Length: 67
Image (cartoon, rainbow, N blue to C red; front, side, top):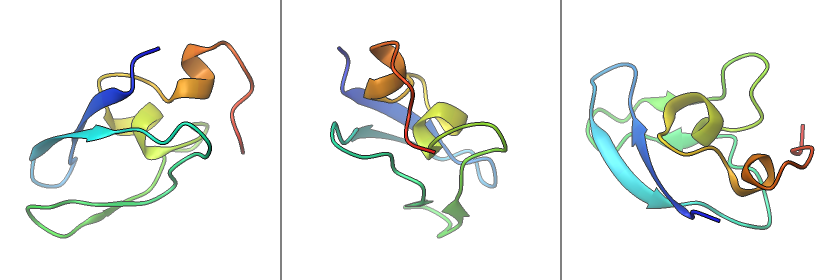
């Protein structure tokens, strides 16, 4: 299981590598460059599934993600 994923802000394009939580979905993320608050796209469970290079741990494991 990969726990590092790089988020890309859709507003300013800033990229930041973060460690994903293994015990919960992350529904919000504040861009460290422009301050935009990222929220999952419709149909995605978390910001990592919407804006990052690697999906969240539950999705990687083939499980239902928290919705």
